[in-house]
Image (cartoon, rainbow, N blue to C red; front, side):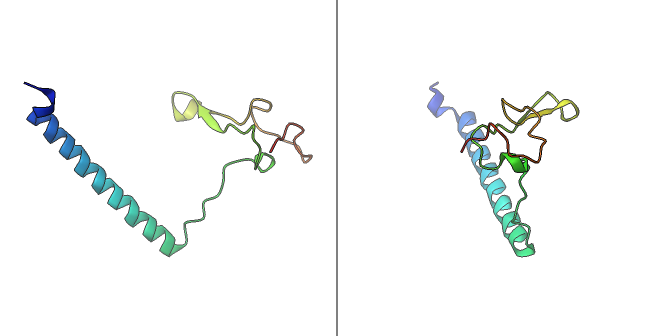
Length: 91
């Protein structure tokens, strides 16, 4: 039997397609509700000194939430913690 004519594969594809369409409709409805309630403005988790910096990485590494560590950039792994501008900032 050819894989393209496999009825189980076709049914599985149709179920996944319908599930994705339902998920997308739900996300759209939630976005509409957020905008109506004024929750569309998302605050950034980027440190103030890192806004606009090309060196910003901002990905958390670790296997679970308790042990995850945010890598801000290669120069300052935990972020720039001074009032002065970061010396490695690059647009």
